[in-house]
Image 1 (tube, rainbow, N blue to C red):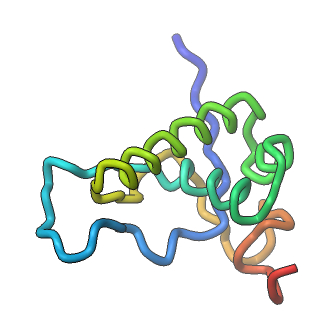
Image 2: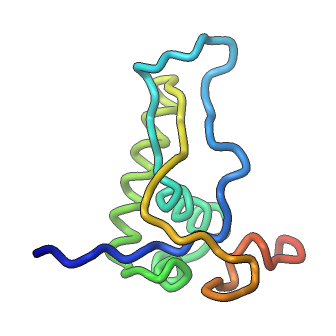
Length: 116
């Protein structure tokens, strides 16, 4: 029997969950779906400037899991940009921050007073 997956800690859902080319009709055949936990790795590493190890601690998972998720997320992001596809952010195995500081770390959206 396989080991149960760990829930990945996510501080907040993305403000916008769908991105795509402007002025083109929605083509349901050309959608790239990124999970919320993959989005969180992009946010923490590329936007917040965390190292993969710090991202792993923040999300409560191993660094190798972060590395795999981050690689997949970047591949999906590149596919959407290069091929003009719609990027949809949904699903995944994550536990959302409760907003009270329990289970959250320094990269949490909800506890920042401003960008450093």
